[in-house]
Amino acid sequence: MIRCTSLPLPRFETKRASDYKVVHATGALGVLNPGEGSIIFFVDRVIPKTNPDGSMTIDMIERELLIEIKMSPVQFKALTMFMMNRIKEYESRFGEIPLPSQQKGKKDIEKFFHT
Picture 1 (cartoon, rainbow, N blue to C red):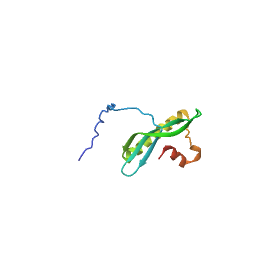
Picture 2: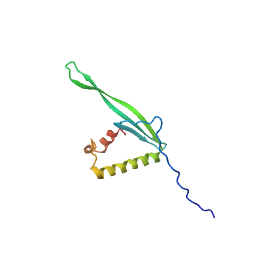
Picture 3: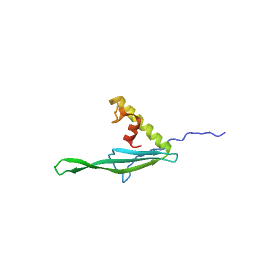
Picture 4: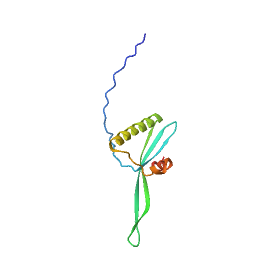
């Protein structure tokens, strides 16, 4: 008879990588396929232009890709569930987080997230 005994969980220690950094992102691009999930975080910056009369207008929007995170489909789903649980906790305490295009329908929300 073979007995299965549970091994104690190893002790986890958290440390930051030498190149660890915090970035502010204004959006993300994402894809999920059978091989992997990928999320690219970016920041959009408004580049102004000064007109001859002294007024300012938007000349262009510069999109800087900050970091790409790749993971397995299982990790991608686990991250999604983790984030949805944090949103539920937040909204139960502070109220619903409105999305800019929530009134226009699902397609517009997908455009907001650039998926």
